[in-house]
Image: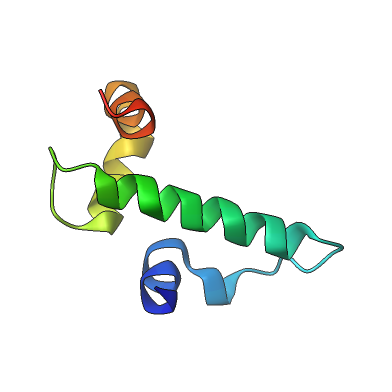
Amino acid sequence: MHWQLDVTFGEDQSRIRKGHADANFSIVRRMALSLLKNEESKNPGVKSKRLAAGWNDDYLEQVLFGT
């Protein structure tokens, strides 16, 4: 999972270190990775799914709500 988080979200490059922000963002990244992995209608790659969700609001809704 660490490799995928690093490749898809650039987790090792993150400079978030203040307070509990690093742990909070880690949870958000893991949740986003899980949602992207569960979505099966688009491209097989998680990184391409993430980009598609950023560009297309309808696809983002599909990823978030599973519709």
